[in-house]
Image (cartoon, rainbow, N blue to C red):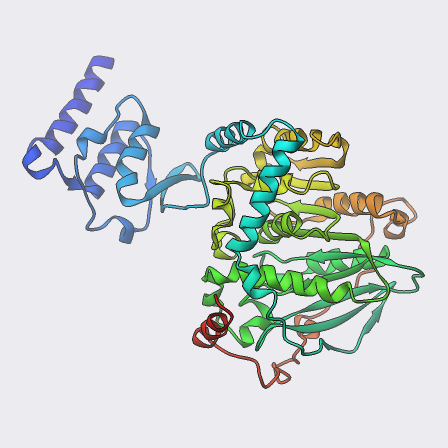
Length: 463
């Protein structure tokens, strides 16, 4: 039977390739090659026809590795900068993703990084090089000095159970605004910790329920909490079409926005500059790791569902600028390690690229923290049955880690039964969280609009 199957496969290859010779580079339509591969390996491809139609593969049948499906796919897809991922049992063909590799390549990458330094001295040198390069890659030396002298815009406070909320708008570059909300504790004496909550690409942005709950609960335990729109989302769309979020500049602008928000918060007399945290999920997790790595004011970092050695964030707002090419290539595991020896909690799950953290990236972090004798300062809480979110279980872990490291009373967030209780949080309508009014009627007169105006501002500051 085995000989018969091999004969059938051989005949299939001959029938498809018989007319091909070196004179025409053994070229065949990619669509035909994929059909043959489906039959030969008993698999199913999934793809957009626009990716395949009209594509011709040179040396097509010479690329088939009958003993290895993986090597075959690599050989026939790489000439077009395509790759494949598993999608419900099918091999989905996608365009090349510069920010994503495989679990195996992530391991190889970390093994390589380990050869670059083996002690604190070697690591400190590497970290300094990475930090300097990342700031340059983000063009922060050009962006940061161009701080407008306008005052922050604040809306009236809304008072709720144990906290208040007020919306803000900060002009971060001439004519460019970032909008968000401050959640502040009620009836707290003395200095308060600060927590930054950069947003990711979750549905409804920062206006979604779980984001409001997270910020409000932080405030209820005594923290000045802030969140804001990512570039060309939310109120930022009053100035920029959502398509502009795909610009590489989005990463630099969002980094600058985070820095500007923190700049303001640390001017508040009630803010404690020795207790400054940052936490976000997905794209917000990418920003969490990056800011924690390059801004020494951060003292607590909690990246959520984003830590990985084989994925650097597929959106230009996470990897559009060449930050991960610094140091002759780095990855988010090493970026997170740059925060050592300060307290860090990585929240991960089993249904996305952070699934490998317990066995791959977390040991790498522990190794780096070990250079400082601070292995107990880094922690991983993994949820193998959960997916890509900042859900209740993850928020509970964040509350506990934050309270422990900021010296706060965690019982303020629990009910009489000792369970975390978010029911006292008032969920607002999206329009209530706008800084510029329900219909954007309060957008400042100097606010620029559109891509051309944006690029002109960036050009003037030496972008």
